[in-house]
Length: 232
Length: 245
Image (cartoon, rainbow over the protein chains, first blue to last red):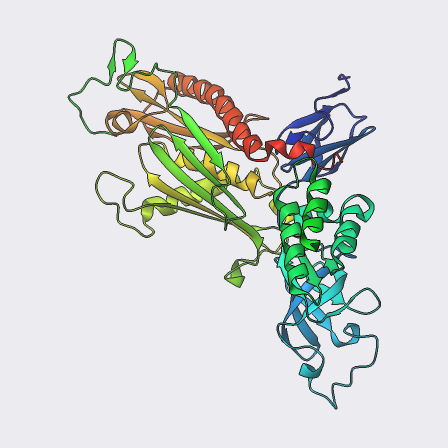
């Protein structure tokens, strides 16, 4: 019988191999694992301790698609089944014709390029990631759709929760503060649209600021002043 | 190894650079030095300098290396043309291919390759200044770069060499000690469990001397692990205040 002990505090930085807790009553979650009676961190990240559940929230890393994710992708080509999409992940993603629209796409009468061409952006739902790492996307049903106009910027996928904020507080502030349309993909792509290019650029700066200063406190106020300064 | 030197390598218990037998050269590690890489690290170990860059998990190229249930780990160790006192001919050679392979086999047990099926993780290790101990420094640098890239790992990997000079076991051989010494034994361990992931030996040692080398190296590896950890924490250290608002 070993002693039950926790070695880390909440929101502490850990690296792989760090012993987070000892004892069978602690349960590893997220980027943590159990080794005999110890709970070990497996990734660089911040700890999150809720009761006896010990979790590591990663601070770095690329996007790995999972079912149900909302992503922004770029159409890279078309095939018989539909379109191929780049969603900034190690695998190829496909958008089948049946999932490309709510209405029937008559590909006998019209060419495929009538609906999507290379370079178009879509806000899509990850329908399924198969065993063979075959990613299927869908743009059926709201809010998933083809993105017209606007600009798409890249951020680190690990900073996406910060851009959205607690219960969407940050994204709400960004939308209301600038009047821009914003869509955030979990793969680290953000789409921004506004008729006024200056407001669009303000939004780009705000999101870049969130990304670079995500670890500093008082970020909400900083973004607020940035948004107000741009309104003049 | 094997060459003869007129110089005494150990004088009154002190080595050429003034170190004691179980003292290693100073280490300086900076994480995240390259912007285009997913993870990177610059490591200075005495006069040896390494730049490590990690890319991935990404699409496997060429496709035939793709593995169904695990990631393909690609390690590319190379020495810059200006890294040695004579010019070092650039491009892959017998030595760099061997070192790439041993580093790959040292890193593979620590990485959760099975969590990234059908992807590739690439580790580039550039030696910009060589002064003995490049393979051990390269492993230390690669570990920091892998952690910086956010790749899931079971543990860190730390590495150091011991050797025999003038019938005495010493830690972390410098260039002259490596060239004119009697034996060289680099090892790499996973410091949490002390599992050994790499051992090589060049030269002759008795069983007792090998045991002594191991003990010395494992002790030193734990020291290095602390420095590696500090380098990562320095880069990400103030992220703790995140989402406090």
